[in-house]
Image (cartoon, rainbow, N blue to C red):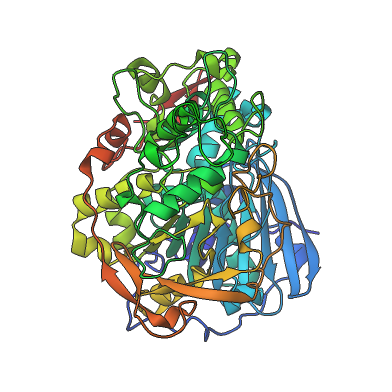
Length: 598
């Protein structure tokens, strides 16, 4: 077949670049209801789409590009795969029967390393469930396991560092939009990015670095302070829980004692005694709640002094010997059942693999395989400076979102308050940083922030982890209807989706779990499970409080109550210096090394 050559000028005109179509802010007057956009049919064959020249659009060679018809329960798609030089593998799935003018990009988790198409937190969104989106995904520029020491070996290649940090998703988005324009004869009317964990970092990175790429972005539990999160935070989760000989102190089978004590002593603030803390920052852990009395032989229902001190260190987060903090905070009270602790005194936790790989290969400017031995890691200013050398490459902590707002972008930011892998204090600090930079009123015009009580990392936990953020994001983006309360739900399997199970002293799975295994790739959302209870969440700083009548498991029986918590000392840490305006740089590779572009 003759190769289809779409020139850069033609593609950009179709995509709206240079014509103003992508830069016009979305307003209530011009937006349409998110369920009523017309279906657009393809104007060329799927086979022809495999021959569209993407190189002028992405600014790099594209290898192995091919297109094939994909049959799914939600209809037929044209699946386009390829590799953007040097090694960014991508997939774009385009509906052949019912495209309703939208594009959706799903972020990766962990350190990525695999290409899949999918979307989370959209199980009640009809267009996503019906397969009406063009959907895209990529491997962030490298191939490898999500977990384990070898996952970070791509850091030996400086270009792959850049691609993982910010380039891969951007050029994949450009490719997906070009394919969309070629296939349907028009650009997407609305483009969305949805991600959690590192996918949340990727989501924020798009808003910060490439404000014209997406109209609506959902960023969950973002690893925005990547350089601190994957070094100091997770290394402390290991070292802060070890004896001098390297054996572990607090084990998985013991966290139920800790959690039960916290729930007994802390107010839920919801008006319901359900063990879910709406304001965990107001819960100040007292060692006397759990520590066994001196000389007490039976420790089945209390913690030893050594275990109690280990718990205190984990709550506090990484500090030096003088007590100076390097992280914004550790996991909050109420998250204990989610802690990914070792199962045995000599076992390894998920935190070990995350920190060891990142410190050895990815975060420092120069990798050192010996650094994978976390017993060598020092919690001091010198280490912080070394781990922060590439903060302007990896971190998504730029509080200046003016260009994203000017473009008409809408951003939903969210975090589970029982998150054990990334402390929600990081996201609270970032949100407040945006408010400080742009003003409260201006921030509220394009950014809404939600905290989910009792919810762990990207889901699971004792709270109400089933939630659809895509539907309210679409309504806000396309009709100007800002989200108010968002319904969250509990399902029969909600507690066991990820991390240790809840319920007293039940022993969690060996090794703990931080990241859920990736779901199979598919270009449509999975429907929500049947809910057994529901509760609203309100934009920060409001919390949900029971109205006093009706079923406590029904979201309609709750009301918003403002709940500001001023704890400035929590945010007094070295990590706070990494949150601020215009703190990112663009990089290139020169003579085999990373170099800042000027």
